[in-house]
Length: 396
Image (cartoon, rainbow, N blue to C red; front, side):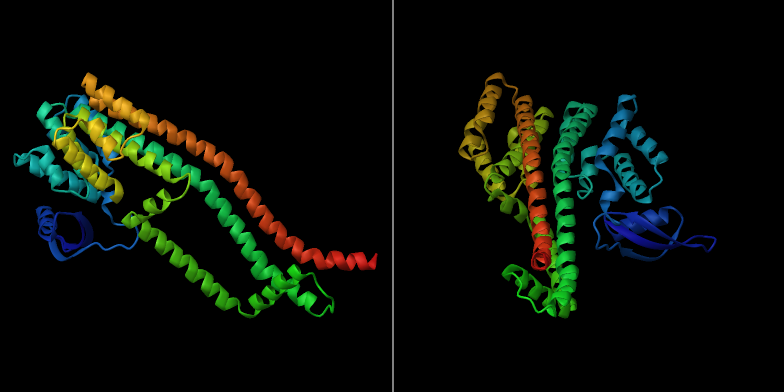
């Protein structure tokens, strides 16, 4: 974790540092090793994601890419980390690299040093490095992890990109509708109030709402703010405990795609670990923390079946972790002995299916959403102007 440290140098200069350490004592040792006196030290607390967090301290993909380039150039692991430390200017990242180097110089294995910082280096990363130590092929394992992470980010990026435009449409359409109902309708209600005319029923109901909104503007704004805040907190809570996945999986037409997406991540991760030399049982154990609660239970069932001697395809099929295509591919992998590449190919098949579904969904959903927003806004405008049309008809 990170610590906010207030220091005093030998020439009596006070400064603040952010130190990344295992605990307070480790952070204090790092500061004192620089020849500074610690006057106060406290953990960094942040309510905003990313601010002062470890994700800013180290980008795992960038770290792997840079280390891979140095190892490929012929440097050893210690020399590579020293080179990364020399060019680094971020104090938090320097602290991470310094701890890695300190552990290696003490004679620890690279995987053990990484495992001491689990918030920065997940078990998946530690596992592929540990497997690479047994084969003395760390560059290939790093390359495999980089490719894995880029494929995960590619699918995630497509999902995010597909959601951006509908969200913008909803925000703009909702904002226009709220402006019309909360500001324009009350003004029209004041105009029609003394007209002494019988208005169409729908127009009258909307103008009654306009009068109410004009008289209770503050209350309505407070209610809208409370509803929006509750929705944001609810979504964040669902995303934190995996409830969002469970909710989406129950929606017709979307639930199966969520399952396919989870299977894609599962197969891709298992394939990478299997290609790295990790047994399938240990790979399943490693990947359990990366899947939803429902799939985690299925994985545990499949793992027990594999340990009892059943083939992986049979165990996955019984635990509902396959589709007809992936089941056939797993059986081919068992016959040929290339289970790792076959798992990766299954994930690629799933990724292609997800990409095609996202494209079809966006092409269908976006025009429907635009039409719905247009109908709502148009209905409000027509209801506002219907009394004017009636008046113009009487005058003619």
